[in-house]
Image 1 (tube, rainbow, N blue to C red):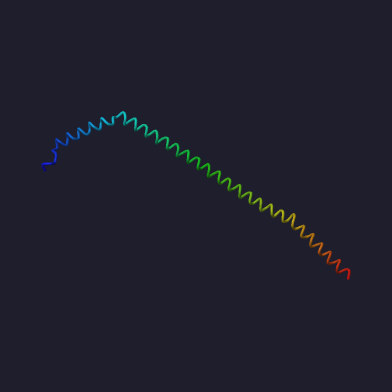
Image 2 (image 1 turned 90 degrees about the vertical axis):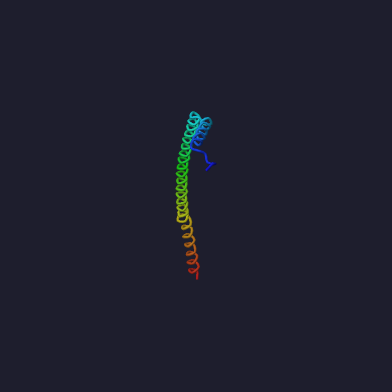
Length: 110
């Protein structure tokens, strides 16, 4: 118990600590630091909002490109169907008719 400080001694030590701390950080400095911190937080919030807005625009543009690519793919498939029905099918019919004529001419000559 002899090593423990008395209440009066503790009070003096706290007063000394308070004086030392008040000399290190004064209220105007603390207020300036607080304003700076609040300003930085406001800037960061604006940056985050800009990033969110840009991300939303990027996602929207990506969806548009995907939709355009799907539309082009549908048009390409339609194009191949058109080629098939307008180009290949008439050619096959002409070939079949030529073969039928050759068969008829060959059988007619007997």
